Length: 305
Ligand SMILES: [Zn+2]
Image 1 (tube, helix red, strand yellow):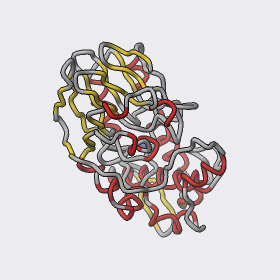
Image 2 (tube, helix red, strand yellow; image 1 turned 45 degrees about the vertical axis):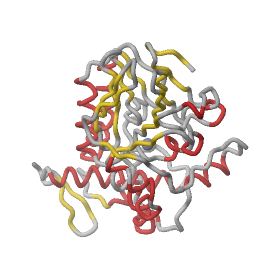
Image 3 (cartoon, rainbow, N blue to C red; image 1 turned 135 degrees about the vertical axis):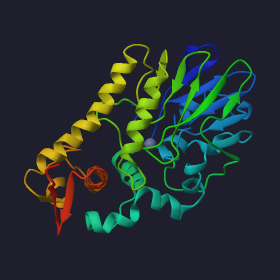
Image 4 (tube, rainbow, N blue to C red; image 1 turned 30 degrees about the horizontal axis):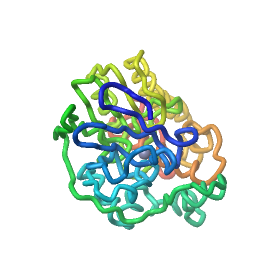
Protein backbone atom coordinates (compact mmCIF):
# COMPACT_ATOMS: atom_id res chain seq x y z
CA UNK A 1 0.00 0.00 0.00
CA UNK A 2 1.10 3.51 -0.73
CA UNK A 3 0.45 6.41 1.64
CA UNK A 4 -1.32 9.30 -0.03
CA UNK A 5 -2.25 11.80 2.69
CA UNK A 6 -3.42 11.14 6.26
CA UNK A 7 -5.59 8.03 6.41
CA UNK A 8 -5.83 7.75 2.61
CA UNK A 9 -3.84 4.93 1.02
CA UNK A 10 -3.56 3.45 -2.43
CA UNK A 11 -3.99 -0.28 -2.83
CA UNK A 12 -1.96 -0.82 -5.97
CA UNK A 13 -3.37 -3.05 -8.64
CA UNK A 14 -1.58 -6.26 -9.49
CA UNK A 15 0.24 -6.21 -12.80
CA UNK A 16 -0.08 -3.18 -15.02
CA UNK A 17 -3.20 -1.68 -13.40
CA UNK A 18 -5.13 -2.67 -16.50
CA UNK A 19 -8.05 -5.05 -16.88
CA UNK A 20 -8.86 -7.23 -14.91
CA UNK A 21 -7.28 -5.11 -12.14
CA UNK A 22 -7.58 -1.53 -10.91
CA UNK A 23 -6.01 0.65 -8.22
CA UNK A 24 -8.26 1.00 -5.16
CA UNK A 25 -8.37 3.63 -2.43
CA UNK A 26 -8.36 2.66 1.23
CA UNK A 27 -9.39 4.90 4.11
CA UNK A 28 -7.63 3.66 7.21
CA UNK A 29 -9.80 5.69 9.58
CA UNK A 30 -11.95 5.01 12.59
CA UNK A 31 -14.27 3.64 9.96
CA UNK A 32 -12.32 1.61 7.42
CA UNK A 33 -13.52 2.00 3.88
CA UNK A 34 -12.39 0.55 0.58
CA UNK A 35 -13.20 2.25 -2.72
CA UNK A 36 -13.41 -0.41 -5.48
CA UNK A 37 -12.29 -3.98 -4.92
CA UNK A 38 -10.49 -4.83 -8.17
CA UNK A 39 -6.83 -4.60 -7.11
CA UNK A 40 -6.43 -8.38 -7.24
CA UNK A 41 -6.29 -10.93 -4.43
CA UNK A 42 -2.57 -10.55 -3.71
CA UNK A 43 -2.83 -6.75 -3.41
CA UNK A 44 -6.01 -6.83 -1.35
CA UNK A 45 -4.36 -9.31 1.03
CA UNK A 46 -2.59 -6.28 2.57
CA UNK A 47 -5.93 -5.25 4.07
CA UNK A 48 -7.52 -6.86 7.10
CA UNK A 49 -10.61 -8.21 5.29
CA UNK A 50 -12.77 -8.61 8.39
CA UNK A 51 -12.04 -5.02 9.48
CA UNK A 52 -13.25 -3.29 6.33
CA UNK A 53 -16.50 -1.62 7.38
CA UNK A 54 -17.60 -0.13 4.10
CA UNK A 55 -17.04 -0.70 0.40
CA UNK A 56 -17.89 1.98 -2.17
CA UNK A 57 -17.91 1.38 -5.89
CA UNK A 58 -17.06 3.99 -8.52
CA UNK A 59 -19.06 1.89 -11.01
CA UNK A 60 -20.17 -1.64 -11.77
CA UNK A 61 -17.42 -2.85 -14.16
CA UNK A 62 -15.89 -6.18 -13.19
CA UNK A 63 -12.29 -4.89 -13.09
CA UNK A 64 -13.50 -2.66 -10.20
CA UNK A 65 -15.71 -5.15 -8.40
CA UNK A 66 -14.11 -8.59 -8.73
CA UNK A 67 -12.88 -8.66 -5.10
CA UNK A 68 -16.46 -8.20 -3.89
CA UNK A 69 -16.64 -11.47 -1.97
CA UNK A 70 -13.53 -10.81 0.18
CA UNK A 71 -15.05 -8.37 2.69
CA UNK A 72 -17.77 -10.19 4.54
CA UNK A 73 -18.34 -7.61 7.27
CA UNK A 74 -18.53 -4.64 4.93
CA UNK A 75 -21.58 -2.61 4.02
CA UNK A 76 -21.60 -2.23 0.23
CA UNK A 77 -22.51 0.99 -1.62
CA UNK A 78 -22.98 1.94 -5.26
CA UNK A 79 -24.69 4.80 -7.11
CA UNK A 80 -28.36 4.16 -7.76
CA UNK A 81 -27.90 4.08 -11.55
CA UNK A 82 -25.16 1.42 -11.46
CA UNK A 83 -27.11 -0.79 -9.09
CA UNK A 84 -29.14 -2.76 -11.71
CA UNK A 85 -26.12 -4.34 -13.49
CA UNK A 86 -24.69 -5.43 -10.12
CA UNK A 87 -27.67 -7.63 -9.37
CA UNK A 88 -29.15 -8.58 -12.75
CA UNK A 89 -27.39 -10.38 -15.60
CA UNK A 90 -30.00 -9.05 -18.02
CA UNK A 91 -29.32 -5.45 -16.98
CA UNK A 92 -25.58 -6.06 -17.08
CA UNK A 93 -25.83 -7.19 -20.71
CA UNK A 94 -28.14 -4.29 -21.55
CA UNK A 95 -25.82 -1.68 -20.02
CA UNK A 96 -22.86 -3.02 -21.98
CA UNK A 97 -24.86 -3.39 -25.21
CA UNK A 98 -24.64 -7.13 -25.79
CA UNK A 99 -28.01 -6.98 -27.57
CA UNK A 100 -26.30 -4.95 -30.33
CA UNK A 101 -23.42 -7.38 -30.80
CA UNK A 102 -24.83 -9.33 -33.76
CA UNK A 103 -25.90 -6.19 -35.57
CA UNK A 104 -22.51 -4.53 -35.07
CA UNK A 105 -20.08 -7.44 -35.26
CA UNK A 106 -22.06 -10.19 -36.94
CA UNK A 107 -20.43 -13.05 -35.07
CA UNK A 108 -21.46 -15.00 -32.00
CA UNK A 109 -21.14 -12.93 -28.82
CA UNK A 110 -17.79 -13.21 -27.06
CA UNK A 111 -17.28 -13.25 -23.30
CA UNK A 112 -14.59 -10.65 -22.53
CA UNK A 113 -13.51 -12.15 -19.21
CA UNK A 114 -13.15 -15.59 -20.79
CA UNK A 115 -11.23 -14.19 -23.76
CA UNK A 116 -8.78 -12.35 -21.46
CA UNK A 117 -8.32 -15.42 -19.25
CA UNK A 118 -7.36 -17.45 -22.32
CA UNK A 119 -4.94 -14.77 -23.49
CA UNK A 120 -3.33 -14.25 -20.09
CA UNK A 121 -3.14 -17.62 -18.41
CA UNK A 122 -2.70 -16.75 -14.74
CA UNK A 123 -3.97 -18.87 -11.87
CA UNK A 124 -4.78 -15.65 -10.00
CA UNK A 125 -7.01 -14.26 -12.73
CA UNK A 126 -10.15 -13.18 -10.91
CA UNK A 127 -13.69 -14.18 -11.71
CA UNK A 128 -14.76 -11.37 -13.98
CA UNK A 129 -17.85 -12.93 -15.48
CA UNK A 130 -21.17 -11.57 -14.32
CA UNK A 131 -22.25 -12.78 -10.94
CA UNK A 132 -24.81 -11.21 -8.70
CA UNK A 133 -23.18 -8.91 -6.13
CA UNK A 134 -25.09 -7.96 -3.04
CA UNK A 135 -25.37 -4.21 -2.44
CA UNK A 136 -26.61 -2.90 0.91
CA UNK A 137 -27.26 0.71 -0.02
CA UNK A 138 -27.41 2.94 -3.07
CA UNK A 139 -26.40 6.60 -2.96
CA UNK A 140 -26.92 9.74 -5.03
CA UNK A 141 -24.85 12.76 -6.01
CA UNK A 142 -23.72 14.93 -3.11
CA UNK A 143 -24.05 12.41 -0.29
CA UNK A 144 -21.34 12.73 2.35
CA UNK A 145 -19.74 9.76 4.09
CA UNK A 146 -17.92 10.15 7.41
CA UNK A 147 -14.98 7.92 8.34
CA UNK A 148 -13.93 9.65 11.56
CA UNK A 149 -10.64 11.30 10.56
CA UNK A 150 -11.97 12.25 7.13
CA UNK A 151 -15.09 12.51 5.00
CA UNK A 152 -15.85 12.04 1.34
CA UNK A 153 -18.54 13.50 -0.86
CA UNK A 154 -19.94 11.41 -3.72
CA UNK A 155 -19.70 13.25 -7.04
CA UNK A 156 -21.89 11.70 -9.69
CA UNK A 157 -19.69 11.70 -12.80
CA UNK A 158 -21.59 9.72 -15.47
CA UNK A 159 -20.46 9.04 -19.02
CA UNK A 160 -18.30 5.95 -18.67
CA UNK A 161 -21.32 4.30 -17.03
CA UNK A 162 -24.62 5.91 -15.96
CA UNK A 163 -23.84 5.76 -12.25
CA UNK A 164 -20.09 6.38 -12.34
CA UNK A 165 -19.08 8.31 -9.21
CA UNK A 166 -15.92 10.05 -8.03
CA UNK A 167 -15.24 10.64 -4.33
CA UNK A 168 -13.79 13.92 -3.09
CA UNK A 169 -11.95 14.16 0.23
CA UNK A 170 -12.08 17.90 0.56
CA UNK A 171 -10.01 18.10 3.74
CA UNK A 172 -7.06 16.36 2.05
CA UNK A 173 -7.75 17.77 -1.42
CA UNK A 174 -7.78 14.23 -2.81
CA UNK A 175 -10.21 13.03 -5.45
CA UNK A 176 -10.65 9.38 -6.41
CA UNK A 177 -11.86 9.45 -9.99
CA UNK A 178 -12.38 5.77 -10.89
CA UNK A 179 -12.34 5.38 -14.66
CA UNK A 180 -11.96 9.06 -15.39
CA UNK A 181 -8.51 7.61 -15.44
CA UNK A 182 -6.45 10.00 -17.56
CA UNK A 183 -4.89 7.18 -19.58
CA UNK A 184 -3.29 8.15 -22.88
CA UNK A 185 -5.91 6.41 -25.02
CA UNK A 186 -8.51 8.77 -23.56
CA UNK A 187 -11.99 8.35 -22.15
CA UNK A 188 -13.72 5.01 -22.74
CA UNK A 189 -17.39 5.19 -23.70
CA UNK A 190 -17.76 1.88 -25.54
CA UNK A 191 -20.90 0.64 -23.79
CA UNK A 192 -24.48 1.10 -24.90
CA UNK A 193 -25.25 3.24 -21.85
CA UNK A 194 -22.04 5.27 -22.02
CA UNK A 195 -22.69 8.93 -22.85
CA UNK A 196 -20.28 11.44 -24.38
CA UNK A 197 -22.09 14.62 -23.26
CA UNK A 198 -22.14 13.33 -19.70
CA UNK A 199 -18.48 12.29 -19.89
CA UNK A 200 -17.45 15.79 -20.99
CA UNK A 201 -19.44 17.38 -18.14
CA UNK A 202 -17.93 14.93 -15.66
CA UNK A 203 -14.35 15.74 -16.68
CA UNK A 204 -15.17 19.46 -16.24
CA UNK A 205 -16.71 18.73 -12.84
CA UNK A 206 -13.48 17.04 -11.70
CA UNK A 207 -11.42 19.92 -13.06
CA UNK A 208 -13.43 22.46 -11.02
CA UNK A 209 -12.44 20.73 -7.77
CA UNK A 210 -8.84 21.90 -8.17
CA UNK A 211 -7.75 18.81 -6.27
CA UNK A 212 -4.19 18.55 -4.93
CA UNK A 213 -4.03 14.83 -5.68
CA UNK A 214 -5.96 12.94 -8.32
CA UNK A 215 -6.11 9.21 -7.72
CA UNK A 216 -7.57 7.18 -10.57
CA UNK A 217 -7.93 3.47 -11.14
CA UNK A 218 -5.52 2.88 -13.99
CA UNK A 219 -2.68 5.38 -13.48
CA UNK A 220 -0.41 6.37 -10.64
CA UNK A 221 -1.72 9.21 -8.45
CA UNK A 222 -1.13 12.65 -9.94
CA UNK A 223 0.07 15.60 -7.86
CA UNK A 224 1.11 17.94 -10.67
CA UNK A 225 -0.41 19.26 -13.88
CA UNK A 226 -3.78 17.83 -12.94
CA UNK A 227 -5.76 20.41 -14.89
CA UNK A 228 -3.56 20.00 -17.98
CA UNK A 229 -3.89 16.23 -17.76
CA UNK A 230 -7.68 16.53 -17.57
CA UNK A 231 -7.67 18.89 -20.57
CA UNK A 232 -5.51 16.47 -22.56
CA UNK A 233 -7.79 13.59 -21.63
CA UNK A 234 -10.88 15.50 -22.79
CA UNK A 235 -8.91 16.66 -25.85
CA UNK A 236 -8.42 13.07 -26.94
CA UNK A 237 -12.21 12.57 -27.02
CA UNK A 238 -12.75 15.82 -28.92
CA UNK A 239 -10.00 14.91 -31.37
CA UNK A 240 -11.80 11.65 -32.11
CA UNK A 241 -14.95 13.64 -32.80
CA UNK A 242 -13.02 15.98 -35.11
CA UNK A 243 -11.74 12.93 -37.01
CA UNK A 244 -15.29 11.62 -37.40
CA UNK A 245 -16.33 14.93 -38.95
CA UNK A 246 -13.22 14.96 -41.16
CA UNK A 247 -13.96 11.41 -42.35
CA UNK A 248 -17.53 12.39 -43.22
CA UNK A 249 -16.40 14.85 -45.90
CA UNK A 250 -17.17 11.76 -47.94
CA UNK A 251 -20.48 10.23 -46.77
CA UNK A 252 -19.81 6.91 -45.08
CA UNK A 253 -21.63 4.01 -43.47
CA UNK A 254 -20.85 2.93 -39.92
CA UNK A 255 -18.85 -0.02 -41.32
CA UNK A 256 -16.79 2.29 -43.51
CA UNK A 257 -16.15 4.68 -40.62
CA UNK A 258 -15.15 1.83 -38.31
CA UNK A 259 -12.64 0.59 -40.88
CA UNK A 260 -10.77 3.91 -40.53
CA UNK A 261 -9.74 3.02 -36.97
CA UNK A 262 -10.46 6.44 -35.48
CA UNK A 263 -10.84 5.07 -31.95
CA UNK A 264 -8.55 2.01 -32.14
CA UNK A 265 -5.84 1.92 -34.77
CA UNK A 266 -6.18 -1.88 -34.85
CA UNK A 267 -8.94 -4.33 -33.97
CA UNK A 268 -7.01 -7.34 -32.67
CA UNK A 269 -10.21 -9.11 -31.65
CA UNK A 270 -13.92 -8.61 -32.14
CA UNK A 271 -14.36 -6.56 -28.97
CA UNK A 272 -12.29 -3.75 -30.45
CA UNK A 273 -14.58 -3.57 -33.46
CA UNK A 274 -17.63 -3.69 -31.17
CA UNK A 275 -16.34 -0.86 -28.96
CA UNK A 276 -15.16 1.16 -31.97
CA UNK A 277 -18.64 1.01 -33.47
CA UNK A 278 -20.42 1.82 -30.23
CA UNK A 279 -18.16 4.83 -29.64
CA UNK A 280 -18.67 6.00 -33.23
CA UNK A 281 -22.43 5.67 -32.80
CA UNK A 282 -22.23 7.81 -29.65
CA UNK A 283 -20.35 10.48 -31.62
CA UNK A 284 -22.73 10.28 -34.59
CA UNK A 285 -25.82 10.56 -32.41
CA UNK A 286 -24.34 13.52 -30.55
CA UNK A 287 -23.44 15.25 -33.84
CA UNK A 288 -26.92 14.45 -35.15
CA UNK A 289 -28.47 16.12 -32.08
CA UNK A 290 -26.32 19.15 -32.84
CA UNK A 291 -27.62 19.14 -36.41
CA UNK A 292 -24.16 18.60 -37.88
CA UNK A 293 -24.62 15.14 -39.45
CA UNK A 294 -27.56 13.23 -40.84
CA UNK A 295 -28.14 9.59 -41.78
CA UNK A 296 -29.37 9.00 -45.32
CA UNK A 297 -30.01 5.36 -46.09
CA UNK A 298 -26.89 3.55 -44.90
CA UNK A 299 -24.59 6.58 -44.98
CA UNK A 300 -23.87 9.42 -42.63
CA UNK A 301 -23.13 12.78 -44.18
CA UNK A 302 -22.35 16.32 -43.03
CA UNK A 303 -25.22 18.79 -43.09
CA UNK A 304 -22.89 21.74 -43.70
CA UNK A 305 -23.88 23.37 -40.41
ZN1 LIG B 1 -14.86 0.94 -16.15
